[in-house]
Length: 216
Length: 140
Image 1 (cartoon, rainbow over the protein chains, first blue to last red):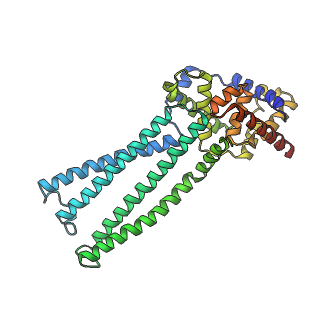
Image 2 (cartoon, rainbow over the protein chains, first blue to last red):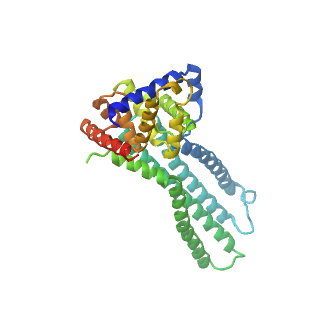
């Protein structure tokens, strides 16, 4: 099929589409107001959820940490296993983790919003989009690994402290460290596999499109 | 060109409208309005996550014109339509964009400006696309 021939058929298709699909302002306005189904819009929606949940947890933990200094008996929890110092260290860990997660998520969110509202050439846009997707995937993997391994470390501490399987600070510390390291390795691979299933093919396709635009 | 069924086509059209609306403030008038619009539309189409299933695509596109006025069109055109969609389905997303701009009678300069490559590379790409199109048609 020659290009000229293709052009004549294309014109038929375009004329047909134009004659069938006239849209008035109301329909356009309605379409614009609908939620976007793009990959970035979906990632942003997950980020909104993380912001809400993270901010709430952060506020609760800060209140509890302050409370543990002002009124230690009232703000103690899990007293059988956690003493006041454990409680404070636990809350401080969660606060640090949440603050770091929120700031990284906010940075990624801002980058996505800026990208969404800018207009670059197809090649430049693809390059930036692949970069953003790569960084977002890394953030998801790393935050998941950090959250899960820290949680596993604390569970290990809870199980072994006082009435646990082992006694002695050294043994408990080693068990907690082992739980954190094993947790980090396992969750890293699980999380990477999950992201690969979700976005692997898609990213490869985008990279191959970008490669197609690189002049040799 | 980028969609495998009517629902996907409508979704993509809506995504393009949303994106045009969102990025309109970034239009500074440095390039033509149509250049800006094509950039946004092609970026949305290329970054679309859904995969195109070739079999479904042919099914949809050969049936798309069986209603109303188009039904009266000659069999020759219908046959050419099938051929066109078959040929285009063998192209990747970037090639589809370039051939679409070419069919829309955009100059090499404009195509280069929209896609972000040199005019020389547009010519190279067009030659490759022509070869690919005729190969696909011969194969089928």
